Amino acid sequence: MNQKIIIAIDGYSSSGKSTLAKAISKKLKYKYIDSGAMYRSVALFAIRKKIFDSDLWNTRNFISILKEIRLKFKWNKKYNQTDIFLNEENIQSKIRSEKVAAKVSLIAQIPELRDKLTTMQRNIGKNKGIVIDGRDVGNCVFPKSELKIFMKGSIEIRSYRRYQDLKKRGEEVSYEEVKKNIIHRDIMDTSRNVSPLKKSIDSIEIDNTFLSIDEQLNLIFQLIKNNHIII
Ligand code: C5P
Image (cartoon, rainbow, N blue to C red; front, side, top):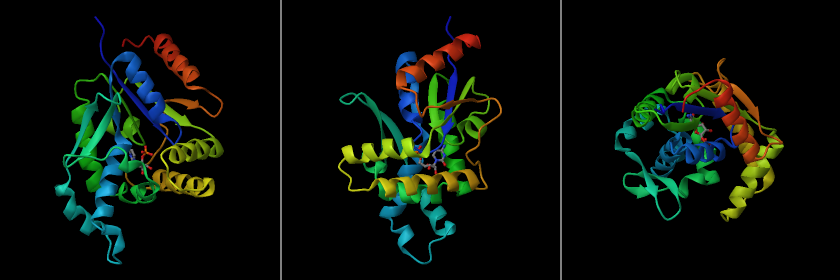
């Protein structure tokens, strides 16, 4: 009998984590959890609440609004994807903006928020059979996951991919702005005190600067086979 596992994918901003995670989850018929979407949803909520507009912005103000936030993932049949809902509103397309990207790493440093989202992620994954991507999933959320991947890629390729993505969505941004945001988020995410982005010793590193998605998928299934991981 097949036994379901947890596949944890961490890595730098725009390193192709979600593309790979979605492809693996499709092949294995596993649930896909985009933990970044959860942090982005909270950032969108905080922007709407004008939390960042005030000179008085501090984490204490922010913590008081945390209890107003309810997040849920729901399957979208039409687009064959999982959408995220904030208090019953589908915000899947709204969380990808550069406005959200500019603020998300700021709130991702707050321990109370990380606790709340970590609990939610563990709940979704309690029966295993998930592929989850983020920054702290291998080290903190699911430290016992059976397969851990750490993704990286050159800053140029990551910025270019993200720039193309945003252009497709109709956002007016320059390549240089996108690159600046990615560098900024990498620094914030690797240097924060609570569960920073860090390669765990038991994760397998993939540099996908020159790898297609099919090559990455082949690599993953080779790893599963070589390590005798039962899926
Ligand atoms: O993965 P994505 O780029 O959508 O994540 C957006 C931001 O959310 C990251 O730059 C990081 O600040 C935060 N994040 C996090 N921990 C996670 C997932 C995302 O801190 N597990």
